[in-house]
Image (tube, rainbow, N blue to C red; front, side, top):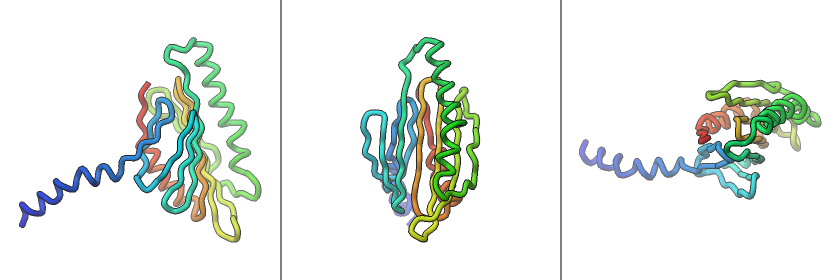
Amino acid sequence: MRTLLASLVLALLPTLAAAQDNPLRAGTLTVQFPKTWNFRASAQRAEGHGPDGETVLLNYRVLHPGAPADVVAQHWIVIRNFARDEMPGFAAGSNAQVIRKVTELPLQDARVEFSSVSKRSRQGQDAYFLQYLFGSSRTIAYFTVEGVGDATQAAARFEKILATQRWQE
């Protein structure tokens, strides 16, 4: 019986791993989404839909390898200015309650993440608006997530997905 169970588990492992493999690439950043998400991507943009009806929009830009130092410096200014000047206004939006104001989280290798969580009402239901901005010396990736449900729970679910991030710079 143990041999049969072990054989079954070994036979299913590749299938289970494949069910979790749905990479979304944004320049030098890759995030693994569950197979239950569907994405359409075009140049520097992607739109995805999750199993609970949530929508993800991704916009990104990538610098060429070996970009001049002044271009890289300007890239960092754009990242920080967008997080400081634009994200708070998007979070507050019309009739939104900001649950988590724009927060900076330093990442490994001089990368950075900014995020915010907001809730609003949509047709009498609780809805959420999440923002995540990732920056590195070559990539800026801006994710927004909208859906119906509890904002804090949605953020926790989406942040588990974002925790799969891999960088290739």
